[in-house]
Length: 240
Image 1 (cartoon, rainbow, N blue to C red):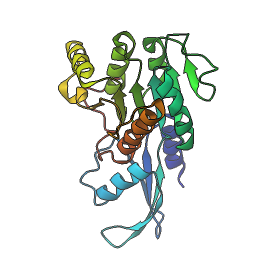
Image 2 (image 1 turned 30 degrees about the horizontal axis):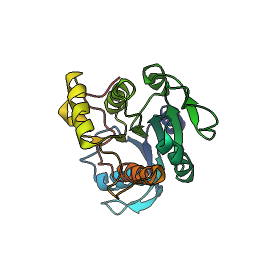
Image 3 (image 1 turned 90 degrees about the vertical axis):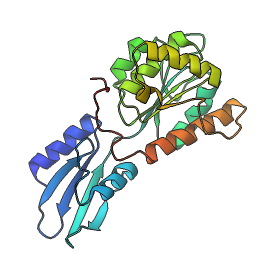
Image 4 (image 1 turned 45 degrees about the vertical axis):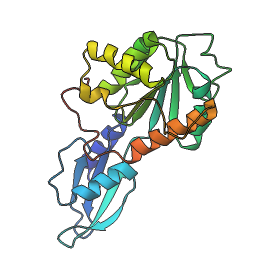
């Protein structure tokens, strides 16, 4: 591997960016493709989209009959939850089983206690003070569970603007309609607001916190694995 390619891979790992090193197995000639590049016209575009979703490396044959090795490097998925509630407690063991690094943020110190969230990163602070430092990105899922607009609204907007692959919010359809009005008044576009999964989770008739946690994770995993090939490309509405 050339030194400049190794440098690119290391930089991508540091910046939580997805990247593929494409190497001709016969000649050793290599090139780098980033997920944020515009590779839609590339002969291997379909393969790139599949590999960025799966995160799996492998040898394939390109359109000219050449054997190429795709070394795929994607960030580990994270989950940021605003709300130290029963549902997020139930989500913690599921996150561990599915290899999601989970973080819980809630300024209500009566709920955000180490005793209730011993296995995840916990911030008993306001989202405005914590989320910018966490650097949400296209490999971060986000769920707002407090049911309190003072805590949830800003955080939802921040997650949308930072291209989180999943953004879900707890609440009924009526609650969500009011939420959409507030977020639109705050300047968020319709295209961003349409990305919110609300009422949150897969429609499985979930009733208990544990069932709701399973329903939420079903949609989180679906959103991660079924992203479109342009899901992580920055657009004019993404935050810096």
